[in-house]
Image (cartoon, rainbow, N blue to C red; front, top):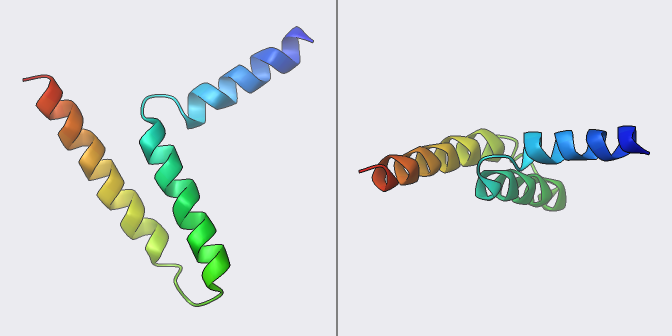
Length: 64
């Protein structure tokens, strides 16, 4: 049982980890891509770049 708990804790920390907003944006964009059923594969890299940039900017502003 401890192995299962440790496994789940690892993946939670790995995916959610530092910024849950990034994980939520990626999951949300994957849902939009799946639901759209169109050729919108390019949406995922755009979302990742924008959210990563916003996350880095937010951290940089909080350390000032």
